[in-house]
Image (tube, rainbow, N blue to C red; front, side, top):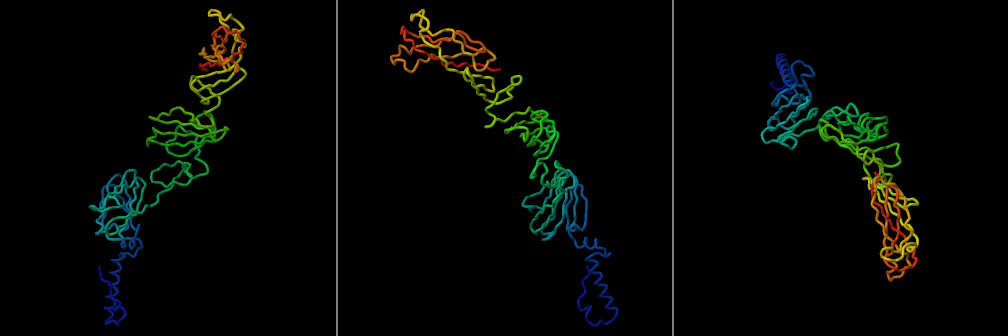
Length: 391
């Protein structure tokens, strides 16, 4: 490169017109070598190695040279971009690398040198970085890419706007088909949507968690935000591309309530408790039902003679109608309970309960039977429990 003329070449009295012309020519040659000979800004920027002053495209393995200072290297495909030795590049050597394709571009420093603290750096599709040499290694500055173009834009490398996929927004993203979701996010429907826990229902808020990039595995949590007076929550999962049925989540607000079923599948609360004049009952979601009641059967010596074959007993025609009907004949357990003032001797207390038969709605011929000859007319009660199924 031509040497820059000294200041003296222009400030001292020239010996001749030729000497001045020679100094000016040397100055021009120097500037041409520094900035380019055509006087164009683009040529000057390229010659100075200014950042983003030149653009090159690469589609296969390439080794960066010092002449690539400041260039934008636009890469497509999957290959390795090798970096020059840091000592050769020198402190401040920089360039821009963009992965404009769908593959992976691997930045590989020379020898054991590091890039961003690692042996290599993989640039995923859409990612761009500014590489700068420290003289011994390479540092990386991320270049922001395009922002998401829609509320559900899942393009790799794009910056997520506030509100996309329902994150950071005052409302989740609106959808019309929960079965078709493939990207993790928060969603909602204001109109009837496909795939809701309850068909043709409105106002669901759904968290979709994708487990597979091809959309074949996922989980969803749905909460009803309108049309209900208590919290309503459901879960389901996708496996092999097929969604399971929705399963209701039970909690402190819906554990107790009215049990129900459809074709043997529970659809209501887990436990239902009720009472009426005939006693109390508890129904469980699996179909089990327990009824219980305490009632008087009158004097225990209303019938019988106090003998082994004809014991004292209460009126044997007492019927207990269950507080709720069974779907199959239940099992009855009963005990005879003496009055509180019965003598502690035990002779008047010894008794058992007898049940003639039962069906779906009642027990018949219930009596308290004394196990002895004491003829005291004690009034006994019966504690009865019946266990069976409500469906």
